[in-house]
Amino acid sequence: MTDSIRALIAGNWKMNGLEAQLGEAEAIAAALASEPARARVALCPPATLISRMAQRLKGGAVEIGAQDIAAQASGAFTGDVSAAMVADAGARLVILGHSERRALHGEDDAEVARKVEAALACGLEPIVCVGETLDQRQAGRAAAIVRGQVEASLPPALKAHAFCVAYEPVWAIGTGLTPSSAEIAALHADIRAALVERLGDTGRRAPILYGGSVKPANAAEILALPEVGGALVGGASLTAADFLPIIRAV
Ligand code: 13P
Image (cartoon, rainbow, N blue to C red; front, side, top):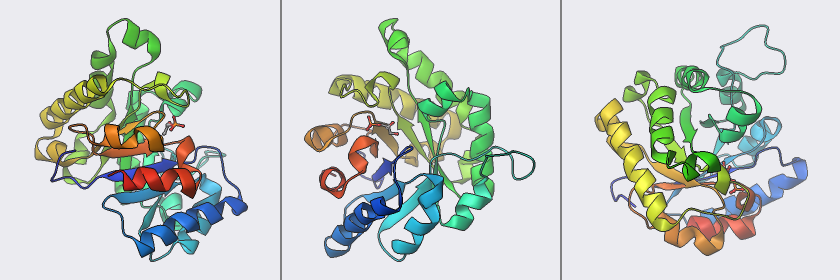
């Protein structure tokens, strides 16, 4: 981990969570209240829970994030939710360009970049996701694909804002598979170089999170790698029992 950057451990609940699940979020917040974490901690519940989670965790150490926003500010976009809406509900961060959005909803880099701009306009801190598929990795193209995503998904406007990048190899998400430590370190170094080239000093300071099958058992090793500035955690963020040891691994 790079010393000057405070790590972020963010939980992405994806399409999981009803009212009853808020007890897990409260248990995480209560544990951090009695023993503060070294890392920043965020939970990104489904849009329906943002407001209730923000109210229940108000004043505590857990920041709330959204999982997506529309690129547009308002208007005739049935079913979509804007940056202003999630900010109004209590979100301070937003995950953008997650591979599930890219693959299942056809989001390309240009749309992700527009969403980043929409997020910044409402004061949200974007967590911009990049990552290669298994085919791309096996073809030796992982670094090139990820560099292309960084260059095309991150608008120059980010120079003046706090943001994170999350490196999530698609084949590691929800599979229990992870790249080797050397592979993670290599990709994170590539992403850092691309960030600095594109955004100068701001690109030096942005945490680069790793995501994809982060669990209590592998968190410490992954989080200790150079240029790994935290984690974006799916399945293991749904319970306090799994998420807390990952937070404590920083
Ligand atoms: P898992 O931790 O469940 O593999 O999910 C990773 C992810 O996609 C987080 O955004």
